[in-house]
Image 1: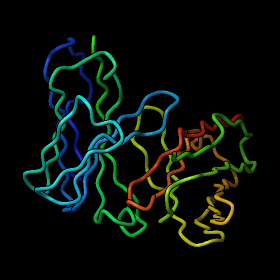
Image 2: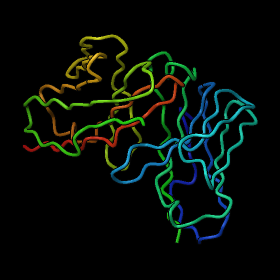
Image 3: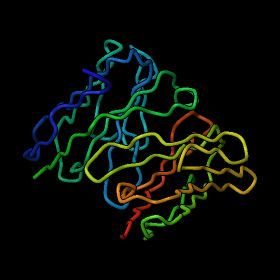
Length: 117
Length: 109
């Protein structure tokens, strides 16, 4: 593992099903983030975690939940998927929540393309 | 509300120079980022500006004017591999990144 690993790469999911998107980082970054990216829109923050054991809501948290039991893992769960949750999901991390890693920016995973039908 | 504006799409010629503009209105300012995103891939960090002025990094330069709420990314000696989307993002007063929708740059030979 180098950087951030997301799984699965893509998934087709029936509406109403529960789904967990996995995210693991090996950089010992304190802060982690989940974004969704939709055509014509900027990346939108779903949930974030500034450090292990804490989480917070972003711009579009409804229908999603997260946990941060340790530094490395930050799974995103869709309790009951709906078609509007069809999107590309990116997990990201930074070594500090303020200044987005001292100006070094976020490191992103390769994304999960989710289609809810 | 918070808003970041950048052109939806731009076209340029290989070997030329292109400037991608970004204007922002955010609650507070703690820095501005530019990211590159190739189709189907993750965004990758290009530059960070927190003070006014120009930051140069090889063929890419980024400029910031905080008083005008304005930044640009300048790409010189364009190569075909520069065809990508370029995302502008501002770190607001809560240290959350606010993202523009991105500018799709098309490079023609």
